[in-house]
Amino acid sequence: MADESFPASGFRSTSDSRLHCSLLKPMLLRNSVSTLLCRPQSRLLHSSRVVCCHSKTNSEAKYKDPFKLGSSDLKNLYEDIKKELFMATQELREMCEYYFDGKGKALRPMLVVLMARACNIHYNNCREVQPQQRSIAVIAEMIHTASLVHDDVIDGSDARRGKKTVNQIWGERQAVLAGDYILSAASVALARIGNATVISVLSQVIEDLVRGEFLQLGSKENENERFAHYLEKTFKKTASLIANSCKAVSILACPDPKVHEIAYQYGKNIGIAFQLIDDVLDFTSCADQLGKPAAADLKLGLATGPVLFACQQFPELNAMIMRRFSSPGDVERAWQYVQESNGVHQTTYLAQRYCSEAIREISKLQPSPERDALIQLTETVLTRDK
Image (cartoon, rainbow, N blue to C red; front, side):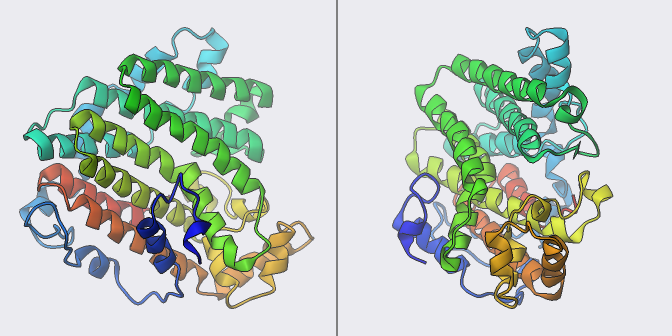
């Protein structure tokens, strides 16, 4: 694919887009996760090599669960979010607080506080998370949840995280307003940070979410452009929030643009990998595991990574993609083609490549338990089952 296939907001340089092009060359699942994650890296800002998350080290034993390392910074996270929503009327507040029940792992806030610590340590050897950096974690979770509420309305979904959606309980109009209110409350919290650069960086996330939703509504007739379209949609709808939140806390940590870019690139790559695995799970997990119906993307007319890779073996999928699996039997046939192809393996391998790139980037920071935890989280992303 040509470099210009990747719009500037998501793939911002020639070298950046060349990386994505190289990742999309025909692939076989020939490398294990451990081989990819343990590969020695170069061009670091310091002299040490990448910490291998699979090597038998004290770091692995102590930080096998990275969530424990950042848990103190996320204590009362959901209570703080609810305080931001307190001015809403009772019914609106109930809708807004519905997903903030504390039952999720809060991956995005965890990535943010670990990145904040890693950047603080890199710059001035200070591990403590600044109040403004913690606010970024709160805001990121609010933006993410607002997007889920809106997505469920657009998709007509009736299940999310193993329970009924907001739109299913209160109705679509009310759900739209709830998502809007969460987003407005996040914007107010963002304004309080008072850093113009940080405000600009996180405002980009909201623009990307809208543009990503429009990208999802369309499809490219040219088969060679479809994967670029898919990855750009994936960046805007999923990875932009993680990338820009990580960049925001790095800006608050230090003035070095190189560190800002490391944080952004780590977040972008692990964010894309996260969504690729999410798309794989739509074909490999049952509804009970996912907390939502399986094959949901096909039913919505969406061609994700496993389908696009399966086209290489089953060209008849191309016509189904263009009609968004709308003809009788399309969903069932497409599902079967994916199961008979290596589309799931190819997409998983691509996710591994993105995680490997995320590790290469974060390994440029000075060694720290937090940096090791961010490396370890790439494995968490690759091995999750829901």
